[in-house]
Image (cartoon, rainbow, N blue to C red):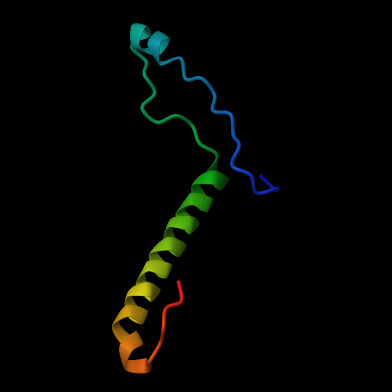
Amino acid sequence: KLEGDNIYKLPHLKKDLQLKSGTVALRPPCDEDVTLDLDALESRLDDEHLVGEIVGMLGPALNIVDDA
């Protein structure tokens, strides 16, 4: 988590056994920190998209050139 890699071994959910017993977990547990990080990432991506739209609308009037 601290080194920035995306290697994470997902735990086996054993859905076949859960189906047989009738206790399928539709929402597997997730660490609260991971959920908060994903929410922050989604918010940042939304903000970056909005900035891109604003630059697209105002760019020609302000002579802004997108080098990307």
